Image 1 (cartoon, one colour):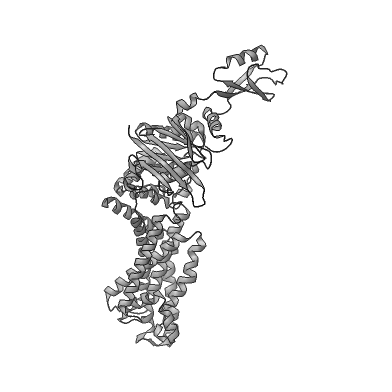
Image 2 (tube, chains in turn red, green; image 1 turned 30 degrees about the vertical axis):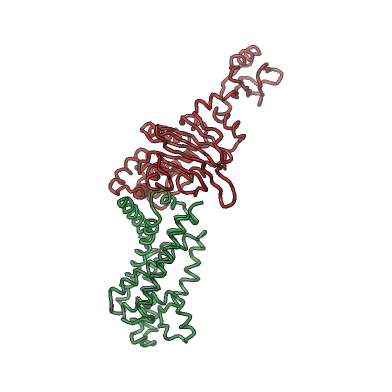
Amino acid sequence: MALALEITHLKKTYSSGKEALKGIDLRVEEGDFYALLGPNGAGKSTTIGVISSLVNKTSGDVKVFGYDITRDMVKSKQQLGIVPQEFNFNQFETVRQIVVNQAGYYGVDRKDAMVRSEKYLKLLDLWDKKDERARMLSGGMKRRLMIARALMHEPRLLILDEPTAGVDIELRRSMWDFLREINEAGTTIILTTHYLEEAEMLCRNIGIIDHGEIIEDTSMKELLSHLEIETFVLDLEVPATASTVALSGYAYQLVDPMTLEVKVTKDQGLNGAFAQLNEQNVKILSMRNKANRLEELFVRLTGNVGGGA
Amino acid sequence: MFSLYWISFKSLVRKEINRFMRIWVQTLVPPVITTSLYFIIFGNFIGARVGEMNGFSFMQFMVPGLIMQSVIANSYSNVSSSFFSQKFQKNIEELLVAPVPTFIIMSGFLVGGMARGLLAGLFVTGVSLFFVPLAVSSWLVVFVTVLMTSLVFSLAGLLNGLFAKSFDDVSIVPTFILTPLTYLGGVFYSITLLPPVWQFISRFNPIVYMISGFRYGFLGAGDMALWTSMAVLALFIVVLFAICYRLIEKGRGLRS
């Protein structure tokens, strides 16, 4: 299978002296749905910046579908659609002007661009806002507008830098469905996100970047199989105290009289814990994962607690 | 490839023209009002007492200068403010991520600036017709000079936009450099009226050559030789184009 993105020994040192990328290598296959995660300041945005030509690389090579971003600038950019983290469209232009102009920059004839704008604005549920100035849109609509804009030249590789930041859960789920659809239709997608649940649900492969280096580059399945301990939160029916609850063989903590946290290793299972709690007459109302499974791994790999992904 | 560049150029020009047309009250009306006042006050009321300037009525003498003044100011401010606001809002990134080469980016902004400058100049010319009949010695010189001057100041505006880090930076140059140079560039007077020292100093003001060349097109006479005016314009175009091109290629203020 062809490579949608090939990064070789990519280095970036800013004029301040900060070494943002220390020679990373990354390969993303055509058709993949790839998550690039890392704490704040790890180098994700710098990597995306270099791919999209907004950041000058210090050394190394970047190829998009085999086209070098420096030597085959036009061809490589034609394959690539970028959805940046910050809103970067002209707030005073109308929704349709923004997407049609962008298509023009990629050589899409105005007549075709008008047709495509209807297609993508309808797909992203923005068609009834086509004549509104962008500044009048809600945050979620602005995010969708950036996706529509990036799709106007029908790129083969779409890179989204935190596309669902600040978007409510309902809208986030509809965006996931949309991204899944375009991925299934053949568009390769690379995604960075703060919501690790999002990466786990959508992406087949994952790269974790930390301190300017790729520390993990594998399939999501493979990565999650490394998860050895999960923390479960049990909501109790009646208040408990340290003397009424004891779980031998398990690490546990009574967070408050109504909440018990239990750490379960891969080969322990939950049955043993339930059996003990049953014997002690501790009734459980409900149970959930303390953190998303990927989040557990991410924290372990990067040592990042409460930071960004 | 030509088709790609042509379509992207047209898109950028359309966007730039739409921008200043959308805010026409801020962009096209002020030069008309300001120059109307100049014509009424300096041309009519004071001009009548000034008498002739280089063999022409003061009003006739002043018209090319005022047209040029509005072309200069509008070409400059259109590009500097449009480029800087796109940089400030980050929507310049729309162009930087797209397969648009530097010379197309520059051409789009420059044509936008020239369109506004020339439109403002046309409106001022229209206003002048209420005060004095239009006499043109050489249409060719008029067109070539106004196009080149408009291009020079669009380029200068682009340079300002590239360096600007705040909106103050965009207004400082026109206020403290461009306006004084324009007023001292012979809009209202012939530099031959100045004492020799000031005549010598005026020769370092490039706007003197531009207004002189333009006035030559209208009246058939200017303060400077026509070829000198053309050479100065050509020199500024080449130098400013090269500087802007280099800065954009390097990503000055655009890429980190």
